[in-house]
Length: 90
Image (cartoon, rainbow, N blue to C red; front, side, top):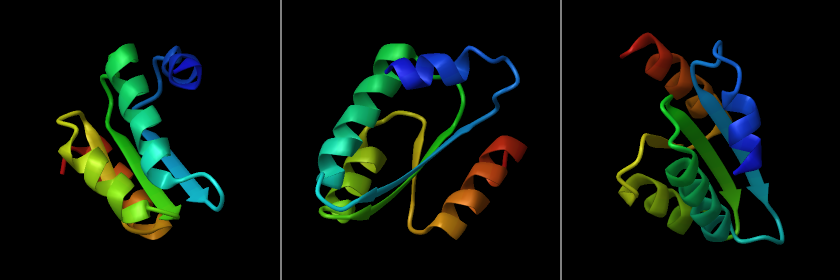
């Protein structure tokens, strides 16, 4: 939550890209944290999240089903493309 607040305190931020490689920590738990932070902070820019590792598929599903402005990416390349498209309004 604090990270999102710090990042979004800059008016020039047009999107947030989160790239997580979960080796020990389960990606579904990370997804829960991201969902909670986005909801609590009231993020008004697109958030693109790439999860890789333990329970990444479950985490991506949670992100997609959250109803928030969170885009689940399948790879780092996909995440980069998704964040650019989101900023450009495509």
